[in-house]
Amino acid sequence: MFILNKDILHLIFEYLEDNKNDLYSCLLVNKTWCEIIVLILWKDPWKKLTYFRSAMLLLNVIISHIQDEAKIKEIYDYLENSGIYMSSHQRPSLNYISFCKHLNLGSITNITENIKDLSERLIVEDEIFKLFINKNVKITHLYIPRKFNYQIHLIPEAKICFSKIKFLRCYTNIDNNILTGLSECKSIEYLVLFIESSNNNYEIIKLIKAQKKLVNVYFGSYDSYEPQDEPFCKILENSLIKHSNTIQYFARYKSFTTEILSSLTNLKCLEFHGDHLFEESKWKCLENLSLPSLQFLKFQECHVKYLISLIENTKGSLTIIELYNYNNIYSENENERIIQSIYQNCPKLIYLTFTPQVDNVLEIEKLLTTCQYLIGLRIISNNNFNWDKFFNALTKISPINLYKFWFDNNFSMEIAHIKFFIDNWKGRNPIFLKLQCKTMKMKYLLEEYELKGRIADCDEW
Image (cartoon, rainbow, N blue to C red):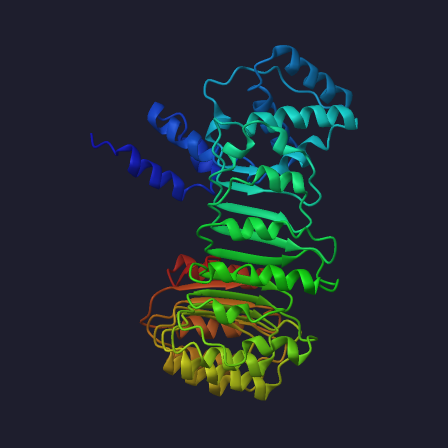
């Protein structure tokens, strides 16, 4: 009998990481499988804690790692005081917590929120934090919730535990005590910051500058309706200059306050969640911006002039473009110019997401003819979109590689449109089709086509 080695098994089970039911079913096959799967399941135990019962089951396992039986009984008493009754604990056969690589402090506080008495809750949190923050646990991903003020710097082995962090997600009003606990950390590669409108902690700039190889950066916003703290944002953006040679992914929510993008010469992925209400001056940083290595572009409601300028200046390197225009801010002419800029400057395009207008089908035809490497097309339609012309063009002149389709806001799409599309998709690969809106009749029709092998999958993208 052929036996797969551990490394191959690990790769297979990692592929199934998001499907816990499949992993659970493999736990009892043999000892080797069990050991590998437990490692994967406990790498991030906070995933998908969507139900109270699953959270309490996890809490019970965590509590069972406490060595002091009296302390365990004390915690059970606190839980019972809040109407939470645990089954009797059993000492774990393995130190599951030592396998943990993702530490989500917000998930822990969400679980302990069920303890009504504040003093009892803090005692339980303290015990849990000490289980996860010690020299035996090597955390690589750290998630810090907003206004988290636990004094982790007082835990003796905190600096060792966090010294090899690769991923950090936190808020810019982070407590100084937390930053002290992270002072030894210089290995962050992926940084996610949610920027506050006020009371930002400038000390976080030191943490950013101390990193040796920052690759992915996401600057989000805690409150999208509040004005941003521009003085802080300028210093924050400029702190990335030191990492200009290593940053490959950059996402920004709200407007840029500096010319930082011009420094990121090796940028491969750029996301910008803008607002059509921005003054034109807020978009100036995109004017004449050259990003020759850019492969992925995701923009929401960008000023058309600067969007086109950016696409033109990528020099043909873009392979994925996602343009979101939920408020229909572009006129038909502007939309036409955007589509033109794509097929004239993006010959390597593989995936495209955009919102066409009523009479943009002619330009879409040119795009389908020019972008011969196109694999996936996502249309976010409005109610006036001409599906008849679109599907007619799609079935006649689509590039040979195109087979993935995702139609959003397809309220105006009729069954006849889909039937025409699939029936005329002859001599090609089966369609991968995803629809946001499906009536029961539409659902039955798709199931029928799936059984015939005309559609490979109705939901995958």
